[in-house]
Image 1 (cartoon, rainbow, N blue to C red):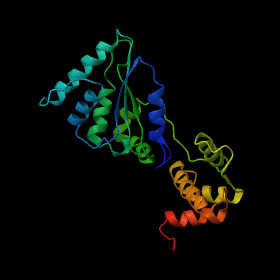
Image 2: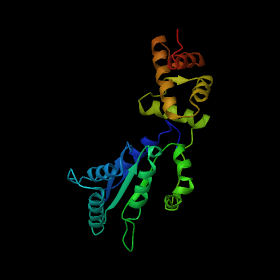
Image 3: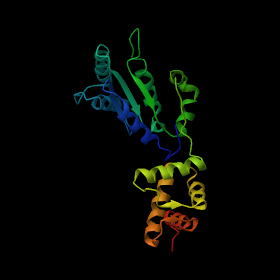
Image 4: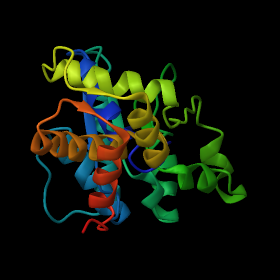
Length: 223
């Protein structure tokens, strides 16, 4: 879990890139659907050819057969659901049922739920205690501190080939952190606008004044 813009989806895609060839993955980016549509989407994401007009039970049987077929191959199957705070109670129950797919020795499907803090509150509901008991790992992605914000900005500049320039004054960096509250998406936005303002002004040392101008641009308050 993490606030809007904290980098949850970015971390998800980075994790997918690091998974080896023994993993089969299904990534659901928009979980606003029915339980039947969810099962169909999972099967399609796993690369299966899915008949058009069959019911939910048939989809579930297809998924179970596919999962069982991966066991002798030594392949792990991972279902990742992004924006999971948008899951309906019906879909959360479907997720719980999917977590039941197992053999006598192992789980057949690893499930990762990614969402905003509302997801934590949903899972704390007494009605979802069966699902909550199946969750073995929880992690909340906090906002960046002032020091982490500075490290993040200069790392991004280095990756982009900045070679030590441009730079930000300490006051500029403090304004960036205060405005963004350490949320990477907002840090990116204000820095991008600030770099453009610095380019227009012909300077490569960005001051608090330039950051203020960038913030006003972002807020639609620039003259």
